[in-house]
Amino acid sequence: MIRSAAMAILLATTVIAHAAESATSKADPAKGKIVAETICVACHGVDGNSVDAANPRLAGQIEEYLHKQLSNFQSVDGKPARRNNAIMAGMVAALSDEDMRNVAAWFASQKLTPAAAQDESKIALGQRLWRQGDFRKGIPACAGCHGPAGAGMPAQYPRLAGQFAEYTASQLRAFRVEERSNDPERMMRMVAATLSDVEIQAVSEYIAGLR
Image (cartoon, rainbow, N blue to C red):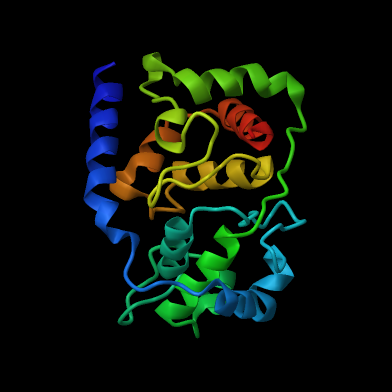
């Protein structure tokens, strides 16, 4: 319980610390659409509704979060990118910060076609983890950061509702083994480290069915 309380405090301070990041110049979704049509379309679709579970659905995602992720895929001053993905690194290599803000605004403005849970037998466990967490293991409720309905919290915590279960599970596993490490204050790595494969699959299935 002490660990869970400490994590909750850390979450709150992280949100405050990053609140000023949301934005500088006004993004232009129309220009972002051009980027989506020329660079993003093959994997994510023009409107951000990917049909392949390996590629996340970006439609309706939080604009600031999308911009942060795109930025994290880029190498800066010769340093390794904060988020390591060879395909995405190639996609964003030639994009300016303005391009990334614009395409983030475009995808954020699109209507999500949500995925659906595929394994109903896992929903009860997933719901419990989402709403309550597990104090015995020091797991905070997912809803504490991502909202009761999975709508997310700008700019650090993404919208998850309706995301492919396969994609969510893959990211939780990546956080667990620290293949992905661009989470604020190591929060997702700490949470994922305590989740079993069964729990990861269960909460991912529940997320896919959230609306």
